[in-house]
Length: 214
Figure 1 (tube, helix red, strand yellow):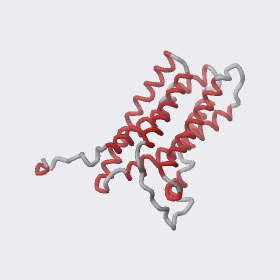
Figure 2 (cartoon, one colour; figure 1 turned 90 degrees about the vertical axis):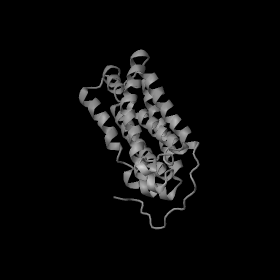
Figure 3 (cartoon, helix red, strand yellow; figure 1 turned 90 degrees about the horizontal axis):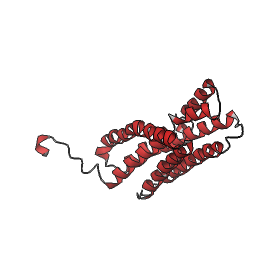
């Protein structure tokens, strides 16, 4: 087979890579599950205007870049898998804020609470996604397979673009918004479990790392 220039993927598609790819899928699904149903909930239940809903959803995109300049320093200074796990735990905390707000449907919820939740949710997801895709998956792959590993893992995130909204809409229309939030928590928690099953060797921090990077 090698004489026919057929690529051999055994060294790439090993157990740890499969687990991290599935973790990448579930992490993205935890976010995309909320995309179609949360605007409906904000409009119909919380009675926000369309402009307020648009701004709150856009706040997530702004939060994605919040921890970006510090990502390199964090993975150099601390255990990279732990930073990823802590970020996902923070994501679950942000989802819990929405779950609490949903339980206060008889009371008016300040708009800034929703915006702050969206910014923090985007920031924690962005940090977790950067570490998972650019560090953990790379560390679990051989040096000559890292480009292919990045390409293959990215497809799992693309699958989440279709799977996440489908799950979110099914839960929203056949259950309620609480079920959507719980589904998101299940996906995020499953990501943590998958990462914990993988052993990442200790790597000493660099001596010349900067806290802030362009």
